[in-house]
Length: 76
Image (cartoon, rainbow, N blue to C red; front, side, top):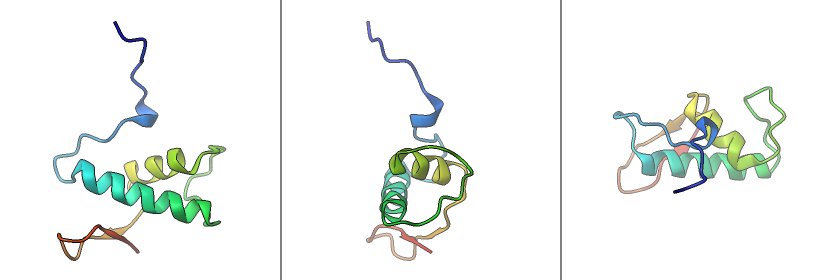
């Protein structure tokens, strides 16, 4: 039996309109922006850029463009 508890903060959204792959790519790119000094869209005290970026993407605060399906999404 696993001791892992489901955590809404760390789950990937189950959205049929967007793929899990796209969520991960956009969140990773946003995390890099946060690590480079970009301001967070959330008024939060989250310390880890990866957690903050996943929450921003999950809430729809990060705008991205998927102009070519052969390349990863670009954050705008």
